[in-house]
Picture 1 (tube, rainbow, N blue to C red):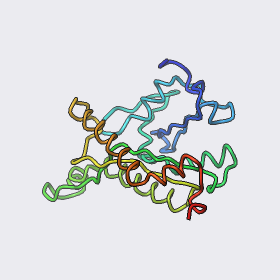
Picture 2 (picture 1 turned 90 degrees about the horizontal axis):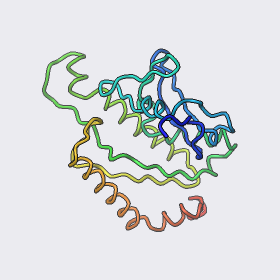
Picture 3 (picture 1 turned 60 degrees about the horizontal axis):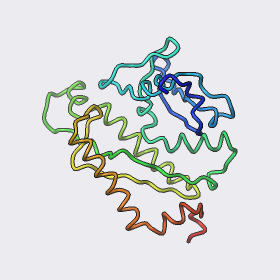
Length: 207
């Protein structure tokens, strides 16, 4: 399955990475998300490219070019998804129903101590994490401001930041717990909004 061409995945799926040489986004699309013009790239390569967060994992090479994590520009890919829906299906924003599922993100708080200067600032604030978190917040605010037919965000904030390369058992168990908490909160406090979302009732009609 890992060597299966990405285009053959039977779902309208898009994944973003960045061409390290040009700094341009590279959007990988399945046939179902591109009118039959998907990317003939092994799925494992797409996964490794979009996961190659700088300072955490090495760039991944595809077609002779290095690629890094698309999270630097689309950590919350809500805006990317909306524009792709408009491009592929000719949809208006009002016709889109957007479910945004987070990954237990949290504010990236820099330490007040440490060496001065540019490198000290980058080390204290976790520059890569800061870039990805800032992009996520901006994309979510933009998507909500555009006013898709319905917009629902499901996420939960961990008690402390989780590094991208933390893969121990306690962290995995924490992520599972947070996922359950996020879903329970939505069902408990936003049950009516969930019903409207699943029924594709635009927000303006529910007022």
